[in-house]
Image (cartoon, rainbow, N blue to C red):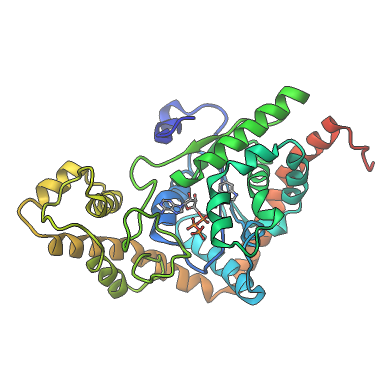
Length: 348
Ligand code: ATP
Ligand code: LTN
């Protein structure tokens, strides 16, 4: 799989007749996204809209693989949808929808479950991590989570899937399922590729830079949320765990500083070398302050747009309904093809 696939989207002058199809999703497990979600995935979604045909989805069916409070899930789904638009997904350019509104996802997932091996699902590191974390609820949905994700992607004949590094293994499985199905029944699915950013593919926790920054971290200093107020963002960066040296350099063993350099680089567009030069002879305090302020500035318009969108529920409803209608239209074509190939008797 092509890991640094930034180059896979053709430049405008060499645009092929058909635009690549892009699909991605995010869970509404909290009403907000983390800085990791944003830099690793969602920020790229908006950027791809002009050169590709994009579909983006709030994956609430994936979210229930972990126990959810129904009222919270409902609230967080709308909030995540608004935030996805605030991060740059334009519902007039992309198909922006909520997974449970489009029935083809669960339908294809069932079929794909029958073409996915127990052994393959058992090897998924996300399953191992989540079952260790939720030992009292290791349900079948958690185990078959990757077949639903494969269905999401394959329904749209997707070429590119913009995700963070942690989703690479799931993507690999989606490709294997597509190849297997195509091998058995002839060409049915496009085989997708991951689109993983070169910087910020894996943002680490600010409290423990050996761990991925995650929505569900109990330590409130570990995770920066896109909707955190600017003062909170700066404060969290000031408290970020680094090392006992005082040199802003990207080097093995300096996980905390490496993480801050990656974040600063993703936000400012500066290379690690330029950052090292700019902060030569300065202490970590100055650097942390600069990173915090740059992130707060980057996220300010996102938060403002989100607040504005959340005041207009009627508009959000119109957007997600329109998105679901379009998503059903495209995905039904693939599902019909699949049902025909596997021998399901047509209804009419
Ligand atoms: P949770 O912590 O609840 O498991 P999550 O933060 O991993 O959730 P998801 O909804 O599973 O969030 O992921 C949405 C997208 O964000 C995916 O493409 C994923 O790869 C990306 N992503 C998540 N965390 C990071 C991170 N720390 N760095 C870069 N990308 C990330
Ligand atoms: N599994 C992903 C969320 C997800 C997704 C998708 C991402 C569900 N379906 C389809 C890309 C394409 C996650 O946990 N981050």
